[in-house]
Amino acid sequence: MDDTIAAISTALGVGAISIIRVSGPQSIEIVNKIFKGKDLSKCESHTINYGHIVDNDEIIDEVLIMLMKAPKTFTLENIIEINCHGGIATTNKILELLLNNGCRLAEPGEFTKRAFLNGRIGLIEAESVMDIINSETELTRKLAINGIEGKISKLIKNLRQEIIEILANIEVNIDYPEYEDAIEMTNKILNEKLIYIKDEINKILIKSQNTKILKEGIKIGIFGRPNVGKSSILNRLLEEDKAIVTNIEGTTRDIVDGTFILNGVTIKLIDTAGIRTTNDIVEKIGVEKSKKTLEEVDLIIVVLNNNEELTNDDKEILEITKNKNRIILVNKNDLPNKLDLSIFKNEDVITSNTTTIEGLDNLKNRIIEIFNLGKIDDKDLTYLSSARSISLLKKCVDIINEIDVSIMNDIPVDMIQIDLKNIWDILGEIIGESYDDELIDQLFTQFCLGK
Picture 1 (cartoon, rainbow, N blue to C red):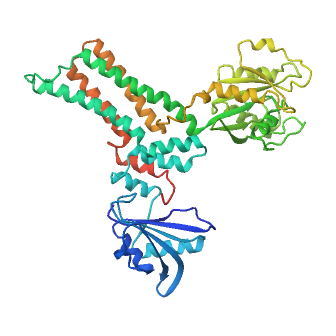
Picture 2: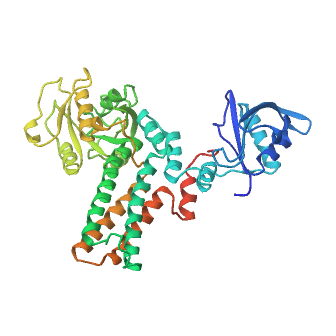
Picture 3: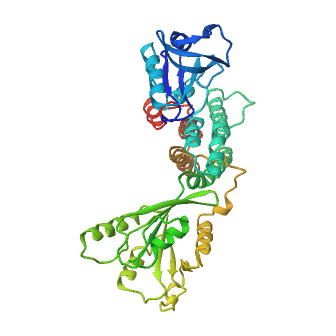
């Protein structure tokens, strides 16, 4: 990281301003070459300086230069942010001048990567930077801020400290048996300490299940045979005419989707093509895509027509969804009842119609109950937010379970310390205390350019 990088940090397009960010040991020297104004090397840190970006004698733009000197910067390196007028041509021209005068074009996420590698932020904080950029709701914003502030990292660091104290105690027992002040780490004492560690990890994991919902949203598929009202239900829930609605069977031949917010959580709603036996080639493709979607959603809404008896197509849909997380939505209850509801004794059944929107509020409330959306505490959002971190934490629980078996079998403590060290390393991987270069490279390529 001995070179100097540059990238456009704002969305490229027409706007009031654009920002080009520069970071590295030669930031001030390089920008001085193309800046007509004060000598930036003589300016105080954290100041804004007026002037012009020039290409030899040609003025490119009138700008404000934000100067931040190391180490009190995001990357712990000298950083300069050039605030120019928004516009593709002007912004690209200034970036071109920086590259021609010694900067290298930054890779996606490289500014945040440098902040991590220089010790400015931990890995969880780095991941949270991307989370706040992608936040779609107030809850996901709060979740990301907690990650940036390091609250989650502190929880993990405390667990690592507990483990390192146990390991140190075991080492003293082995290497200095004559040292009487040290507690003899027996299997019984070790078991008590592991119960606490496991409980703390499980608390984080339980909360982190909510995090997945907050961050990724809930994917819900609407399934049923043609003309039972699936598209009308989608439109009503989204409060817009997203899907075409007609009385002609098979109108929806492809996936139609949209999102709405429920209790602060993004609901991704998918209207599928009506599932039925058909000889129409195009409709048949739509039916196959609908069946494939069954495996991709978190909740299935099976729509039936209150005004008709069950058809063979209805029965097929009920059969292929019977072991899945589903709600039976009996639509068109404003029409005469011809459907026998007694066959759904142990099912989630909601009746509705899209004329008066009757029952759709009940459907929303049932979704809230199924995913415990009413119990998400926005005052305590210190959860892990990445699938990588959650899977590593689950791995720690698996190892602790293996240690439990070893303790039951009276395996000596000094042999168990290998597994304890493994847990300590995995927890370190979560917060970035231990990592491999390939992981870091892969993680930061998911960031946008200029961040």
